Amino acid sequence: MTSTVPDETPIQTLYDTTSDALAAVLDAVPEEGWAAPSPCAGWSARDVVAHLIDTERDFLTGHGADLGAAPDLDAGPATAWRQHSKAVAEALADGSLPGTAYDGHFGRTTVGDTLAQFYVFDLVVHRWDIATAVGADASLTDAELDRIEAGADGFGDALYLDGVCKPGVEAPAGAGRATRILARLGRRG
Image 1 (cartoon, rainbow, N blue to C red):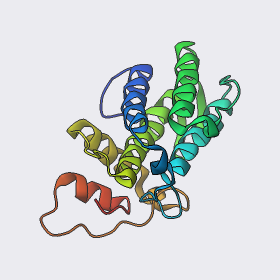
Image 2: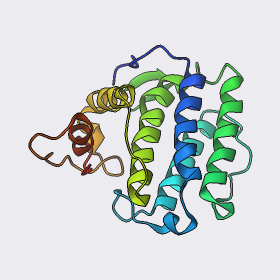
Image 3: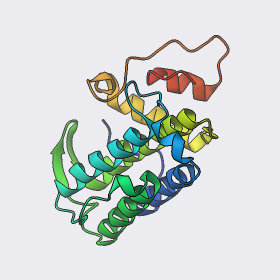
Image 4: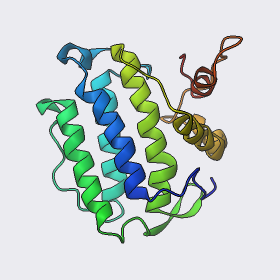
């Protein structure tokens, strides 16, 4: 994976903006919507939120971030997400965390680059999954589609490793850009 992200937005701003867009979708999910099946096989909308929190916590705490206690999903997934994203924002505000270098799956990188290239990608895609699960507005901006596409290009065949994305599916003839990109991630849009 290259270390170039599609824009030069500082990671804290990029993360906060993406997290806020996800939070807006989560805030609109009705209580019964949390059990709705998502496009991620075997996961409910609630499970997708749990996945986002767990994977980000594992990654960031593994690189020295103090995120405090894990939020309680039983208090409500939207509330848990807001608590988690606030802890991430506080960790990023430290300034040193984003530049922390380590040897990643694709070679030497930094925590900030990994957040921008993978975790922001994950937030955008899973926001679509949750919105789709509950019948909410699942539209993606051109900038978000650019990010997803750049991420998929950068991951190469690793995109389809177990636990990342299902193999791509064929998009319908004449499908729009979002449907084509999401089909690449094994999703039918």
